[in-house]
Image 1 (spheres, helix red, strand yellow):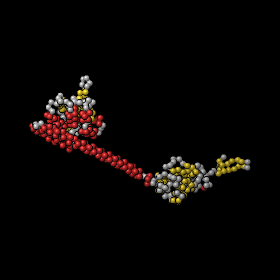
Image 2: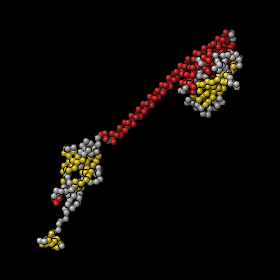
Image 3: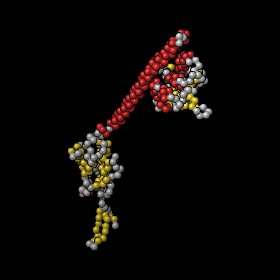
Image 4: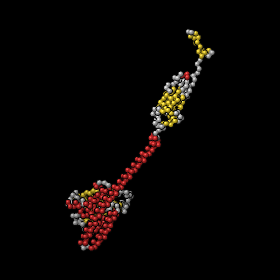
Amino acid sequence: MVFAGYTWGATDLGLVGFRELPAPAPMPPPVLERLQVNNRTAAFSPGLRLLHASNTLSIRFYALHYRSEGRIPYRYRLRESSAEFTQTFAREVQFANLSPGRYTFEMQAQNEAGGWSAPTVWAFEIRPAWWQTGWFWGGLLLTLVLGTAGWYCDRLQKAQRESEMSHRMRELESAALRAQRNPHLIFSCLTSIQHFIAENDATEATDYLVRFARLVRLALHGSVGRTHTLREEVEMLESYLAPEQLRFPDRFTYDIDIEASLDPDDISLPPLLVQPFVENALLHGMKNKMQGGRFGVTFALDGSTLIVTVSDNGLAMEVASPHAAAGRRSVDMMLTQRRLVILAGQSSEAAFRHENITDAKGNAAGMKVELRIPLEGQNTDGISA
């Protein structure tokens, strides 16, 4: 029973009255009393910035509320680390090995009625080490990218230098092989001139000398230049074959054919590649033929490869005498084959092959040689005669 501000109740000893209890007093915000950083006292300055190694903190606090008689519940949290509060009756909390970043420490106290005080808030920052900064990782990434790009460029330049050196060495080797070819060609022509002089055929000897001079000029030009036109190659072959036909008028005939789609002025090839095979067909293939010999040279295009075929009706490889067979594999021929391999950058079988020609009865009737000369870097589309 409540009457006149008192609550009345009956007991064995009589009537007892109790005055109503006052409303609970609000809990004041906790006070941050002491800060220790790595066991060293520091001040609670707003926005305190700590080094990356100063990352172990101890915070001591208190709240004044006499009705709680010193038994005050607290709760706290680091907003950036946890969204949930941690409750404690202790008046000190510790945070060990905090990662670099910005933090906000929030603390509240509770009164006897269970109400929480307004929060006490303190913000601080732990700065990252220099190797933990974005500038460092950005610089490291940039260094790695530039280093990788530099390494790649260096490797590329080295590979290009090696390729250029290899290409240059192939050119020098080819030029050396070409230079070795010239004395043989000149010696062969001088032998023919000697024949005309011995036969007292001054007219033919003079005509041959004119052709010989033309042939030597073309050969010397080929020794200096890397390539010449297909027309010059055919002219060189004509300059060599025409005098030989005068020397042996009834012994052989020849034909030089160029595929209709080829323009002899637009096709370039290394000089003195075809002539050794023509000479071989003439001197060795026709060795035992006194008349009726014939051979042909054809030029055709297969994609970006010039196909040169030299065929004759002379001695086949397997029926030739040992001496003739050896002639067909002369040093001059081997030098030219080596040039083809260097030029094509492939095996000898892919750059040069030969086969015997058989008649209707399967008997050997001559020999055919096929050369594959790459026309690297030349426009072979739409060529017309």
